Image 1 (tube, rainbow, N blue to C red):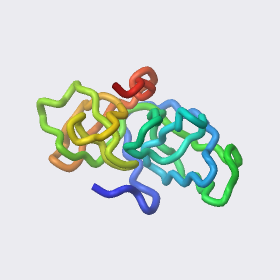
Image 2 (image 1 turned 180 degrees about the vertical axis):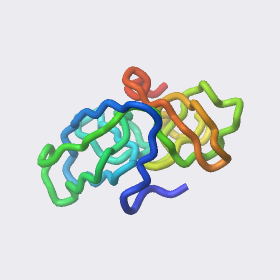
Image 3 (image 1 turned 135 degrees about the vertical axis):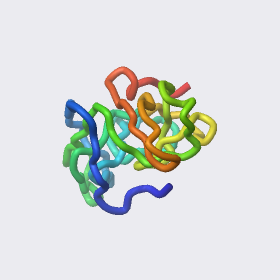
Length: 144
């Protein structure tokens, strides 16, 4: 799959909880992108499968801090059940943790390099799309 280059389709099921996080310098998460906090800086950015990242939710709107200093803007990240593009998932993965592949795609642990948990797979809609429960306590798990 491909990382977002514009605002995505924010599809969710049920209630969500929104929390603000200070945006990192140069960060530009689009609406519907997975949001991570860089554990070395404490600032939010669009999700990547890179070291020192923790998923904190899904961006409810675009936050363009591309030309801004750290904490100049806030990223609104929501937890709840969200639809994502997926790769390498199958029906037997329902109930298991899924991991960041890019800011718009989740995968199983074999396809991700840094195993940054996004949440629990609750429905495999097709080979390309799924629903994930991104919840506090799951999204914030340290990668193993």
